[in-house]
Image (tube, rainbow, N blue to C red; front, side, top):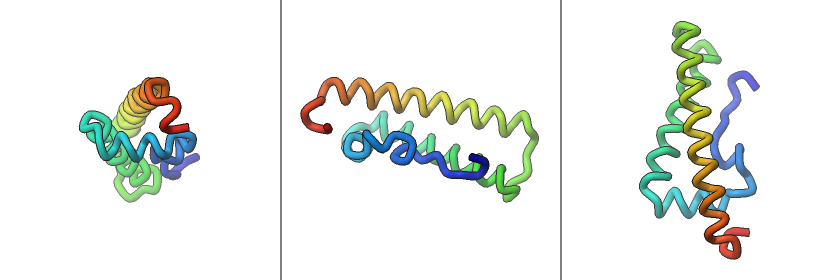
Length: 88
């Protein structure tokens, strides 16, 4: 929805434990996670007219957010497969 947060734990509730683990123990995951949430906050500010910008800029941010979300999801899926018994 418009203006709603799209934070990673809310997007992938089945991975909450793994998200916490990777955020605390994997610097690459943590970097992507922080970048994703900064983009998400900026997009929400734009959608709520807190920060007026061009449509092109807003769409570019959304594409970056989707790209990062895909990368994070891919890492979660791979880690879940590697540690299936630990995080089910």
